[in-house]
Image (tube, helix red, strand yellow):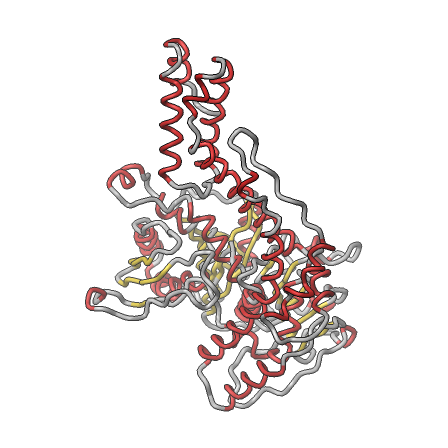
Length: 566
């Protein structure tokens, strides 16, 4: 099965990605909204398209069906989808399998969920098919559940069934963050909640309880995007803290796995382990030698890029030998006995994909190893604790570790915000103060991670490394945007609290017209950038604008009432 790319993420990346994509679609479902929708508008809020990819020994791969038919895919995109939709011939995948992949589009990345079935065609000796959902939303668990329901019937009933599925999706409400939705799909109803970026990993309210009013609900999904962390990390859970550091720092990572399913799930788990921090580099849950970016990611003429790759082809053991960090995993199984500790191995010992499972790197972690979490998980395996409970423990550990790391940065960046008393309605909003690495490091002595974490080690070194990473750059840009928007919102409120009509009476017509145009632009900016401004504030500002215009001569009134904003 193949899936898509937003987020959060890791969880945070996924959630934030999904929230960004969904935000513009989360409008009320009243009669006016319904009348404004065109056919397939609701479908497009969830999926870009559904593809059927076929493979036979003589003709190779080909996209056989794209639905809805008007969906656009370039030839390059179709080629990528064709190669990514099937397990590598060396992976030994037999029977039905589902996995996730991402591919680059001209408008950004798409995540795809793929359901692969190795059914024999009636007329051809070997004929394989994959059903692929392509979406901009990172709701892996939702799409996986959806494919489990529709794939078997599709391969029996073909295109008419696929059209009916897409028609069902076209009746779904928009994926509004924070909303609990009931989504019908081919006779069943899925109940789920769309997460927001404020949700902490693993804490999204679970809609499991079936009340009387929910008698028609077929299934309740506890999450739309999270993966089974413990199942994915089980082969290497002795090294989870080191892997957390590598992901946090945006280090180049390769996951070598026996199948696309295990590859994609492990990559998604790695990306999510630093939530609620967003993973800002590229990640490819399933990557093949035919990918259009193969040369870019495997060249030896420059340092490996900040990306996490999931691969299954043995060829990569040689091609990516120069990469600094490689995770080799075997079949993902929940062992009945405590896994044996696997030592970190030197990269030179990784000669083939058949090398023993483990982590191959020369990386020296900045923080001392937390033995408690390992003992807790080991005890859980001995006591046959359910994997769901193990995942909750692991997710909470990652969350607390990430929050301990990021809180000092949040606290320092908040101090860069100008005081509210510095905001004048008659001047442009003040600028944020510059981030100073030295000033930040000075705050760590009294307000560092030691306040919330008992872990010892070189926290200062970890911060210095992080400040050079893509994850810091993405995080800081996001905070800058939030604080700049807050300043703009405070400036709007300051304007609303002034007697603007009185001001206009004391100034020339030219100055008054200039003020009106600036105020109109402020309103446009508030709408365009979705500034955190109360509706009452915007209405009050519009009233000020109208009052000022009505106090002007008739000829100017006509011009200003017709004049929009730029």
